[in-house]
Image 1 (cartoon, helix red, strand yellow):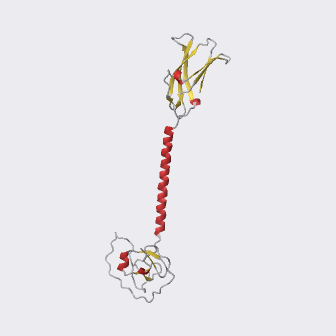
Image 2 (tube, rainbow, N blue to C red):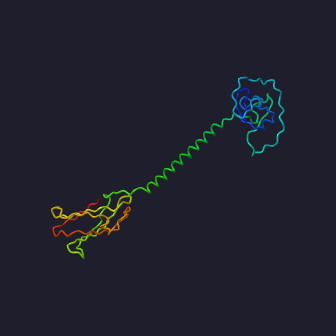
Image 3 (spheres, rainbow, N blue to C red):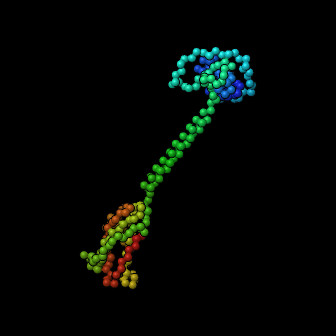
Length: 238
């Protein structure tokens, strides 16, 4: 409950026990005047009064005997004294309740921080989930030919067999590329050219296969032997 000093209009929070114990007589912690708290007692913050009450003729109020204060109980206590007492004594006074706006601000600040934290966590979660289900990139320029050997096919005449090793240097996995093989002479004239799909150089087992990051894979290519004129081999990936 709330009450208001009739002299300086300061507003205080009180309890029913405090009002009944002192018969409604309270001393203001701002102007130190005694006022009747029951006149402005309200469950909501009262509006300022227009009339100022003269309390000089107020009869002295007898201070009731009080029990020893329990430190575990609330710190605010009612101080009822005669109007001619000094305001600088050791008894506590009621002070205007100014903590409520700060408590409300801290409450909304905490809610805002929790809400922003939740949004950030959701964003991180969906980013990770999206990357996990993201379609693999196709970056043939990031596939390297590490080594290769060319020799005559042991079972087929006029056929060259090429064994090679590929490596994917891209950061993500990607499909096996289409490999273009060019054979040229000493003057860089193309003598033979053929493109191989993954199903051809991986023995028809390339469906769904992927090259992971830094993965190396061995492949085999077959091409018709162009004869002794072929002196250079060139690989290109698509």
